[in-house]
Amino acid sequence: MSDLKKTESQSGLLRRFWHSVFRGPVYPRDDSDRKLIVLSHLLLHFRPVRLPAKNLRYTHTWGLGGMSMTLFFVLAATGVLLMFVYEPSPGYAYDSIANLQTNLLFGKLIRNIHYWSANLLIVLVTFHLIRVYLTGAYYPPRQFNWVLGLLLLFCVLVSNFTGYLMPWDQLSYWAITIVTGMMGYAPFIGEWLQDVVRGGTEIGSTTLVNFYATHTTVMPALIIVLMMFHFWRIRKAGGVVIPRSPGEEKEEKPEQALTLPHLLLREFSVALVLIAFVMVLSVVFDAPLGEAANPGMSPNPAKAPWYFLGFQELLIHFDPLFAVVIIPLLGALGLFFIPYIRYEKDTSGIFMMSREGRRLGLVAALTALFITPVFIVADEYWIDWDAWMRGVSPVVSNGVLPATILGAALTGYCAFLKRRYSASNNEVVQFVFVLLSVAFVILTITEIWFRGPRMALVWPWSL
Image 1: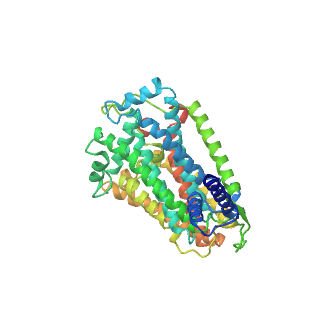
Image 2: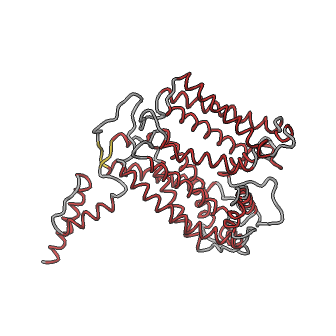
Image 3: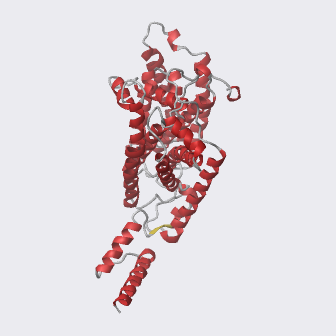
């Protein structure tokens, strides 16, 4: 009889839990209700019971946040499997990867999944950041969540950077050599920063162990903590910003839809499609593995990981102090302070703020598409600040002067467009964001496909 009562109690608990998920909160009457509240709060911590129906529109978020989280768990799962066979030592690291790919069942597939998931994660997190900006999801009360998103992007980049060295082949060894070499240009702390990252003056066994520990322990823990904090802040702000059209006022009480099954079914479907895509990509394309690392022979050209190639391209056009320190620092500070700029109006939920904002965004993209290649070609074949200003410090001739000219041109262009289109501060900041983002993408593409031996400009098919 007691077993029967226990069964009935459990079934009642499940019925009330199901009722709480679909109908609303349950208030505690006894111990079973308290257990129910704990269970429902844990399960629904990251998702509310109900959400605005407009937020279910796939084209509003493109599922970028959920896809990024999916890839993180795929990386965690495949990373654990790789740890069983990988040896973080210069004498064995390359052989352990080669053995994984040739002698272990599905070893190559696991590494391919890990490699492509890591690269796709950078792309998706970046697109997520752009989507958040273009839909105005950084206005109060979401300012700090924008900062958390930037910190997550930074952690993803560091995680990929530290993992890049793991194969210990020529590609990874010299890519890390280039990036850590860039750190030496930081004034006052450059050499110290280099030694900390490398674990000494040269890249060796200490570097590999430090990178391995950071990649497998420190960065995953940081990402998990920041990710949970990020989700909690979204819940605290009332969920994802509600989409609306230009001129449409915010709805005080938007139409609601149940998270179960509407939102979770969509997220589950997108996750399955993403995993299928990664699987196909991993079957068709193998993760690169060159010859074993040779510290005495550098490849020509030696390039940084693709997500840092935009900065390597800047090194060709600017003094190292500007290319590696000042320009990236100003860009990072600008991104962090975007939510805290004084704006004239709240355009949250409106894609690119207004019809005028969309027009200005298109002008910004077209301007960057035209000006950036022209600047690259002109600097390659015609502009030579050092020769024109002999005897002047390269920091001035190849840093202060061109940066001042470009900054003044951008400021004047923004002032002209502000008057021409009667643009608000919101739209001008968005113009700069789009222009600089597209310009950096073009710099990255140039470094990937249009730089050959000795970093000379070449056509991709001649490489």
